[in-house]
Length: 332
Image (cartoon, rainbow, N blue to C red):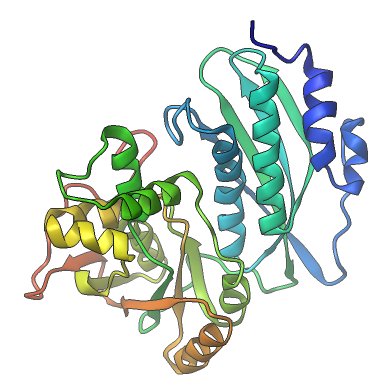
């Protein structure tokens, strides 16, 4: 017989209290006390994840926990905020196995260590429906330095950190074992699936965003859809050549063998890279600063008068896209 958690107190004190910040008071109170540095502001972001939507119910609980925190840290990074802590609400369909909870807390601990934040508190409930993990992340930014996503201007250069499309391709591999029938080496397959399971928002982007970005957001719903949000804020259009979209070696191998996979790459989402605009006169300084801290940045295009985002092919003609990104109500 499997050994399940006996009650809420055991779940909290045995598995979550060791992750708590000092101000969380051992998770023995109904609230936490959080100190904020002088001349700083608190940045707050909530991004829940749910089994069957954002992860598979049989995923390793270490990966589930990592993802739950990572997707929220990604939002903070895109605002130029340093992560400091988070609260978590767990809605469980039944009392979890002790082995599951041990692995889940280990995944949270690893994510905390990677992102430099601690657990402030939260709640646990038993609820009908799939496992749901709602994290609210808190970050700190110097007063007046919060970077919005709607404040870019026509003429700004639009950059993306890292590479795009790995997680979306990894999801297809996780779902059905292949990607459009394209041959994917075991090493590349592992890399794509790992990117889906464990997004890795880059803390090095915080300083770059804070110092140089006129606007920024993380890419969670698909590059085209999130780029449209940035362009809309600037009341501008953005043309992105497909060749400008940065691909990992694994994603490139898929696109080269099946060119239609570029649709998944630009609209699949779950990249958790930072999309940001930079005034043209500060581009050289931004590139130098990014190079100095080993943050990969790639130019996608320049905001220009107009409306919308267009992906162009090798001929320069617009590419027809079946979808531009994920929507929680459409499901695509």
